[in-house]
Image (cartoon, rainbow, N blue to C red):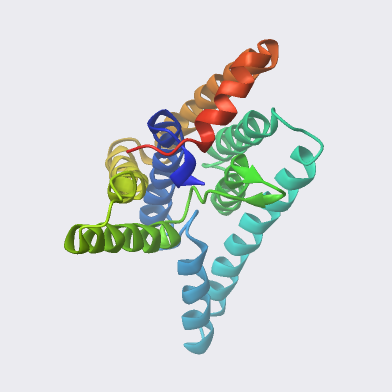
Length: 240
């Protein structure tokens, strides 16, 4: 889906990705190397823990994976009947989980980790097409593969002289998404070093604000049928 978004859409999605990176940065430092949005890493950790006899580590990793999946399931069930409002509703739910996790950080730190992982699962439902997630917001492996493919295609176009001017800069969109999660992780670690888990209030408030912006955009589109058509065309329009 990223290849069909205009730059405004890329930056909007990239900001969500940056918030996911923020959460992951805080969680990685506070919870000792476990991930809150990157479940491939937790899956690897669970296997390593199991094979080395670290049952507690295995339980921790698998509980985070399970919580992430549960967040996706709940968000899918809640947003499936919706159409235009699917994105803001998923984002509001993610914000609620983030704020609840922050509020319980001192009393129940493990519950905080589970709620944060669930929030990251929920927000991935924001970009859904035909019942499937069309843009991964909290994991960048697929994005980096697409970046490499697009960059390789651009190089081939330059070498062969083929007319692919529009697609030669396609890799920039994937590079922006990757950069956003990286910068967000950096911000999360820096904030954690100064504020501890209290830094999660920042990302919770940020998600709440971004959900409200998404809601306003969708309501405007519903009120103006012509604007809705233009937005759909813009989503399909490639950018250079």
